[in-house]
Amino acid sequence: MEAPHTSKEADAQNPEQTIVVSGIQPSGRLHLGNYFGAIRQHIDLHQQHEAYYFIVNYHALTSVQDADLLREHTMDVALDYLALGFDPEEAHLFIQSDVPAVTELAWIFYNLVSVGRLERGVAYKDKIEQGLTPNAGLLNYPVLQAADILIYGGTLVPVGADQKQHIEITRDLAQRFNQTFCSEDDPLFPVPEAHILDDVAVIPGVDGRKMSKSYGNTIGIFDEGKTLKKKVMSIVTDSTPLDEPKDPEACNVFALIKHFADDAKQAEIAEQYRAGGYGYGHAKKELLGLIDDYFAEARARRKELEQRPDYVMDVLRDGGRQAREQAYAFMERVRAATGLVTTY
Ligand code: AQP
Image (cartoon, rainbow, N blue to C red; front, side):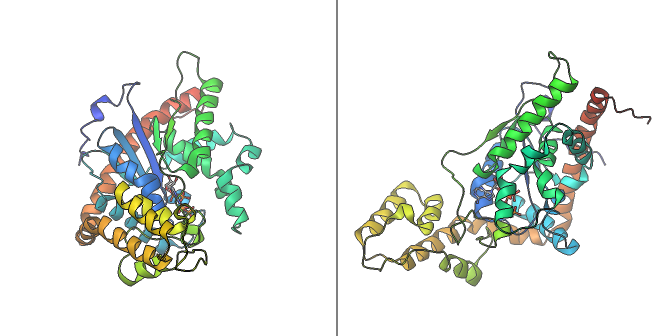
């Protein structure tokens, strides 16, 4: 069956066209950091531009090495995106490993970046400092990420602030490849820009570190009931007594409230912090209510979608087919440029 094409695809060969590309790891349930750092932008941007969003299961293998769990998380991410407003008529949603050519492009890129550059990666160093054992996949993570972005001719990459350095590596690899293998007036890869929302710093987890699946400090987008309450109530705060004034800007609870409450509500809560007589327990209850309301619709939609696994598979299959077409056409040009002879 011929895959339906998205409404913006007619322009795909236009070099001026914005092509939005971004990935998300199925390394655990998606959390508020993923949502405010990346997914919210993904949903906004896919209405405006040609967009490729993929569930990066090759990347997740750096930390998830349990087949059932990886499969489960992969389908969970797809359900989450559809529930949060991704429209398959507008853009492509697919599984990274449905386009294995990205690993081929990554291999080509390995030869254009030094090991030292990868060892200085902030995300890599951070994970090691947190006690994770680095495998070669973790070190090379940004190279595969660059292949993911560049194989679709990506020009705009909506990511959280923590990914800034990785996108720099992608930009360098695009330039390096163009300089090494292309003539100056006919570069193969566009040099993409990161799209990072100014008002979103890195979202803190319940322990105050970056909210991250691998730190076990997340609040899930689709957590609800007792699970959600337990996590919100466990957010680390200082020990200022209830009666005393508190600084909202130094509080992990307020850092999250800011993303859910409008300006007036934020100002009202900040005032209560400063006035004293307002405890962290009050703030946590407020946050709990805000999270519940914010995701109520998406939760209901997700429950409906859980009953339609065939539909979710169809979306992923169609997205993968379209992405493969684009990627394989591109790889022919990459092979020609690099001198990799193909005999088929
Ligand atoms: N805490 C965060 N604040 C802002 N943005 C965040 N992102 C992740 N955590 C935060 C953004 O979410 C997008 C997808 O992230 P990912 O799952 O592909 O990788 P990640 O950044 O490594 O997320 P985790 O939770 O930390 O995963 P693990 O622990 O498995 O490595 C990215 O755009 C990221 O910026």
